[in-house]
Amino acid sequence: MKGTRWLTTTALAVAIGASLVGCASSSAQRDSSKIQIEASLYPLQWLSEQVGGSNVEVRSLARPGVEPHHLELAPKEFARVHDADLLVMIKGFQPAIDDAVAGMDNKVFDAATFNHVTIVDDTQNDHDHADDDHDGGHSEASHDGHDHGSVDPHLWLDPTVFSDVAVGLADRLAEMDPSNADAYRSRGAKVVQLLASIDDNYREALGACESRYLVTSHSAFGSLARRYNFQQIGIARSAAEMEPSPSHLAEIAEMVADKDVRTIYVEPLGSEELTRTVAKETGAAIAVLDPIETITDDSAAEDYGALMAVNLETLVEGQRCK
Image (cartoon, rainbow, N blue to C red):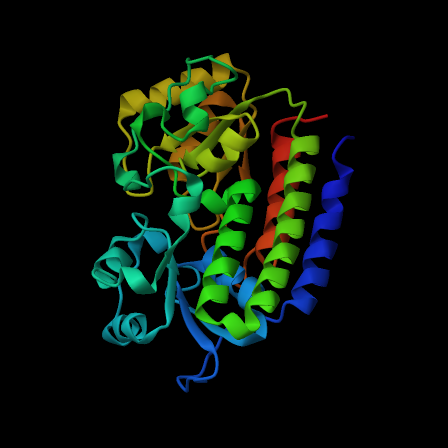
């Protein structure tokens, strides 16, 4: 089978992780010699730890096992936002954090700027047209992130975009702490190496698949789909859409049958009810695909790099890749 090199990704991630010591602090006591970072959700916490290393303290505003879209900040977390030296976030993804940082642009590192698009509220996501068969489901506009008028903010699922974020964060930290600039940029370069390896593994393993239709419980995988030439079809078009219309579900079921889709993907934290309804009607199997928004003791792997490797194995099997 092609793509067996992705199995080395976890080993590379462990090796890099050993040299890039994470500094997430569980203590309320701040070390004034270190840059205090608040990250809006797990992938940005992971990236901040890798790039910042021993020169930063990183905490995540998101709670393990809780959908980051639905985050509400307690007073103590609101205070942490205002006390931090840097807020690493994706503007437009978590309304509570957007509200908390209003007027604090000088403290904000917005990862969305490296997606080369404007992130919009995913409750505005409209329909992914199952029958649009232009270039494997992707027009030129969709590669710019603008097809159907909305943008998937899960930019970390495209390692090439996340690599740009890593470089940008290293530069921002170097500006804040010039005496350690070389260390930030060196660690950033190691993260870029890891992300390039993940991207190589995905491109090799997913290059020849029997199905290019990615049917998911909700539309959280647009960045991944654009990068690796899949057409994402969301059963729920956003995390906020709890009850898709019967006509939408019927259209999804018809597409699954018509396009010979044999696997439908659910998320670890999501409800499987609607997905099981479609799967039962069409005979499709169900597999877990992690958007890596959060990480818990029940996650399939212990960090971002390892979860990307698990996701790749799931996609190779589910999309019937050779």
